Image (cartoon, rainbow, N blue to C red; front, side, top):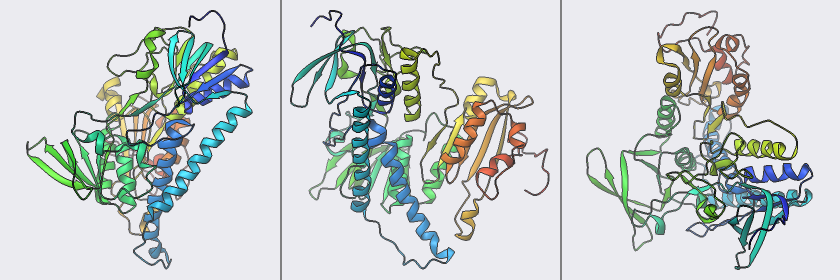
Length: 492
């Protein structure tokens, strides 16, 4: 098995998700001989899926479609206010939605296979592990082994949801985001455990589809995000009917004779033990990188012992110079599809296209697709204060009411925007936080300005598009520190 200078490929990509596919296709377009190996280990529930990675199969794509299904429910409830004669209450058919979403995802799986074929990238459906620093051994579902070697290797294996294996019954009876989008039948009354964006997004759309949904949080929601925005996100969800069990941690899940799940938890505030019955328990307590089965030590690749993620430099290189890691599997990288895609493309161009462009991970915009969407780019208020000192930061903010909410008499008390700026003129924008409808669309536009170094003065000179929610950003005149508004002119 010694590698003897014979290389099957210029580039071997381990992982057929967002980052891996982007890197492989770009390298192939630059004339390289490329192979992609991809293998999906079934979830503990037995859920499996095709090529395309988390985003396509069990992440962004099905999540956004089901979020849309939930939003439509809200619009149907608004419709009578606007003169539509819609018989209420409207009922939702999980089976129909699931089938439509799953069929779309399967079409994407097929599309990815076709794209690889078109670009002459060899695709192997095998589980890879390192033999040495240039060679991997791949095993098929049936146990057949294949050896592949390459000059450069890119690891893009991403991550999978974490199970709290120390909790009795967690693995046997719980599901994760790997399963929720592939359920044929409605999950029914659901307990979502966790306070991650995955937890809140799933709980939000389950509530929106009319299911009895409870979120159990040990500590703070949306850790790593702006905490004022996070509390508004959960306040809106609670107002829409999602129940929250705060400072609680589950200790046991048992299956009752009728198939229901009895969950025992501890209230950390009172120390009391409580019990409840649910049809589904969804764990959303974080993700672990897919590094354990790669035998990285055979190639001498260093990982962070705590996170199990692969250590990389600014060029995405690991401790072995010709082996790279991109996307969620790499240490210190945002766990986002678009960053993995861009990092993969730029890496291929540096390796094979005479480029020197490295990925810039600052000011990456993102959106949490909770019932009221939260878009942000740049620093949170907490990060800005920590980095620059409280006295050097100015925060402009405002509550606002989307026009769409008025006729339907929707509650807009959580619709809120804030812009975190440096205090000294021209007040460089450090971060923008938007809570409201279509947050992703709004944030994307402003992200370009912030990437280009926009100042508060420039944003104030930007003419708003009336009547939109996005125009509210260009009207942020009130400073959070003083509460005073030194610059109010004309009509609000």
